[in-house]
Length: 106
Image (cartoon, rainbow, N blue to C red):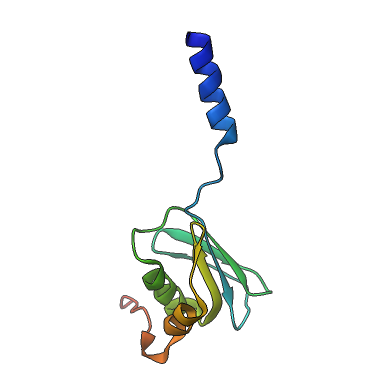
């Protein structure tokens, strides 16, 4: 019985999918940049494709997008954990009333 349990645990471990906490975005104005935002490490390439690694903070997807746009600029795509914003949600995320994420005084 112990051997079967070990084999079952091993099978689950090797078949486990990649973590779904990763996020992705595409900048409308491509630039290379790296930054930490809300518990996620974002890396953007010269083609505008950005990848966010880390668990991030617990917040709605649209809010995370707005905070991202506030720091890095408008996006054409934003997704996290296998869930992507619709075209209308991306437009709302990019809206001018979005506001910038305030920075602490230095």
